Length: 143
Image (cartoon, rainbow, N blue to C red):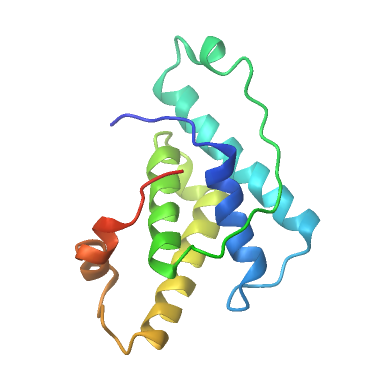
């Protein structure tokens, strides 16, 4: 597998979506900023594990900064795909499935999929069917 460090905008879009939409647990702006840092750190941990010999040079200027961003054009399907991308870029190290980031992404994906089911009358009976759909394929993988 390959791995890259996701943009601040990618992580900020995920966190902003969770912050603004009512179907997720309510977080304060400080809490969601802290969560953004956790997600970014998990992605960095994965990158460092995958590329142990050159991560320091690659990341010397990286400094994650949280800010709320506009999410008007982000659908539930797009949000799920952004989550899947973050998970794919964060899962290289062995402790990932024991991390808080893993639990957050797992929970948020479940909540988003349930909300999608509620809005679209079970158009996608399973998450597997969703990720193999044309609509999912058309969504962006990363920002």
